Image (tube, rainbow, N blue to C red; front, side, top):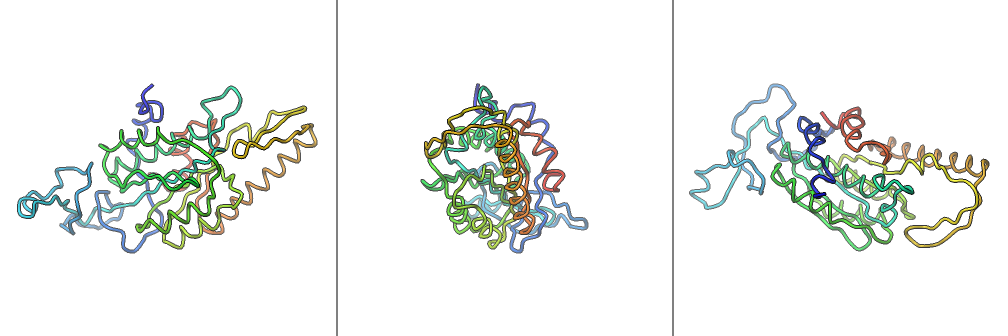
Length: 300
């Protein structure tokens, strides 16, 4: 199956075609662009120029300027706005896990599909899109890109992503925040299995003026474990093994600790104004975009 169909089937694309990502906070210095303003009372007068980016609508190219300067520039209008959309993916080894006999519920695959949908919406509305894979080996990035014409390149990039080792989310997210000069709407997709935590990284994003959405990717088997009896559990990142016997008491303890952890993540996000969505891999990925993000006012 081609990567374009595996990650973003045509039927899903049609459901996403009418959508637009929206940032709920206004950031000073955001450049004008191709996005239609949702503000009333704006004009359609000429506002400024910006450099042409592959994928831009050629109908907005100023051919007179191109003839004089031999450089392509896009005309911007007063009723058009530009949104920088940043999609960050945790590519630690723990993300490459799926429940037994449920390969379609693989955490990495689910996150790739979710990123593909968000990226498609962003490109379709002329946003400035970047995709970044976070790993202790460094940051891998696609973009910046604009325009629906970049969709296939985006999907091919996502299709090549692989997981390995552990990821220090604090360090990697902070590295991205310090490198990225353009504040925007940031989606962080992770299972949050990072020993060093994630709060410091998110704080750095917020300090740099980003609006942050945390998409917490977990499998249904983790939320509702079917395990019982004598088991040997292996950490997919470190390879360390642990012998356990799971009975009703231990299962209850697990469920309580899981709920405390999830409540703690939600509280930390709410305290900082970060949007939080628990994204279970047994949920159709487009439902996260069409319903969960729409309820938060991040998709219209």
